[in-house]
Length: 315
Image 1 (cartoon, rainbow, N blue to C red):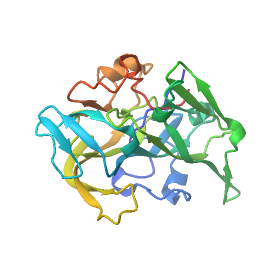
Image 2: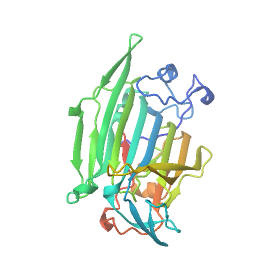
Image 3: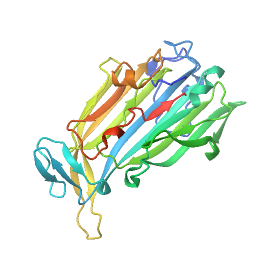
Image 4: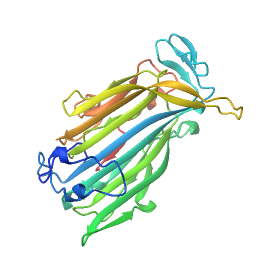
């Protein structure tokens, strides 16, 4: 099984300082088209040019939380003193994952890295706690006689498969991929499981030039956020705010809820040499960002804590 690792690579024609990160999707840059090898991984078959995972929360009026230090209601901005709440009404909170990935195929043998699998929560009994996909857009870019041709992936190449009673996996397969092609994957996923955040895998089975995980989490939810302690991974945290609107047409003013904004960025991550699995991800052997709620949860079934991997590239 080929698995992709997202990291920042250098290439022969350009130094890392001259390779600017292209955050705009839909138009690969000249530098990306000219990249044909990775200096620290000259035999790489493919490379992740850019990956970002942005996690945000949406709160609505009436969202109440019972914390370990007492009851706290976001309606009156009384936060649980020790942070973690024990009970959340999923009808009044949701999460949004915005995922953007751009990879380049360096050799024809690297075409398998165009495949992508996305794990999502899809309980066969609880319809209110199912993840939902929105705005999925997968595009192949190819240079033909100096001109850029692009083709959007058809729905026929996207298949959903149930893997157990709680999880599904979405298989994305792009046909006719060749060396030199640039592939872009964009999608959004909503979740009502507010106390469970999918881990963001920074490292893959191919080099990664740049990978970013940004999470804005309401202050009332206290997570342990773990990231690799290595020179090419940086992290920062800042205070933010989330606007909480009323669910009723009562003309109440929107309220701000204090949030913690975590930003973790990885550059020049080498490919992981072995097969990536749940064990070496959980142990930290494979570089990733892991989040875990500080207090035990009672609104999540014990048998559906879930796979730590949300996005798998290159199966």
